[in-house]
Length: 367
Image (cartoon, rainbow, N blue to C red):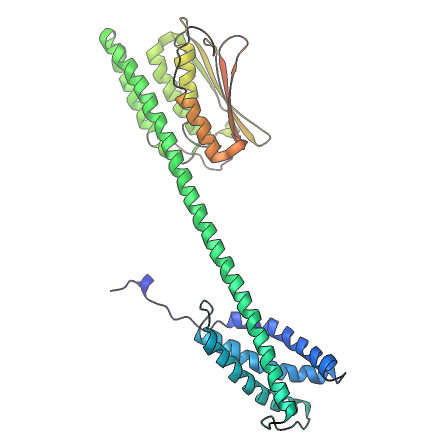
């Protein structure tokens, strides 16, 4: 049994389209009156010719366009031969009835419209020519409209495919971050188990809490700075268990930026890099600062550490997966309006600065 959506619905007569076409028909009638007055009739009364043109042309328009819309509708294109027959019959009927109507309205005796006089034959031919011109005009107009509609539909389909491809690429890039962080933490957990089981258990507990907080939010299309900073607090708490007093951190998030929206998991790779390659290899450890600010419509996220720095010989070299991932995600989402820079600090360490368009939000995502 067909559903409601699949049952064909009977379409009513398209009165709005008929009224829209009437504007062009009226204009054509005026042009015909001008042509008859100043070209064919040598300066006869324009008003009388206009009245005759309105009577004959109006009836021809109602018959031709009315039959077309009633029989073939707005969306279907009328077959050529049947529609030519409609034009010929409608033109003859319009010439006869329109001439009679003109004589009645103008109170003028006009020759019998059915008489085969040269004048009647000439006016009938002129009416058919005008109707044919109208047919060509409306056919071209409908064809252009149909092509524009098809082009708009094709553009919408292409944009939909592009959005789906971009979303799939973002999800792939985003999914790379989670196992990267998880494998690093599990490797450290494995090392702690053999010589400090208590700290290993505490690290495992913190890891479970962190994963509970991140696994749902990391798969969202967007999050807020408040949520992102809370996740960084959970992650840094996890790292403090692992590094102890060697790690200190500061999270600086202004209240008016808490609801700002951004892609998830942008800060975590930068903080992880600062710890893994800058602070952890340093004997005395160090301090990491995460800040957020906005200037000129651009949101700036800064991760600054006082670790070994970019080119220190004691620094562990990584795969640059996190940095590459962030840059690719920013390029996909924002193009050249977003960027990530890494610069050495004068006193040692590295400053990672991430800049992207500021997207304020009135709602705040809760963990």
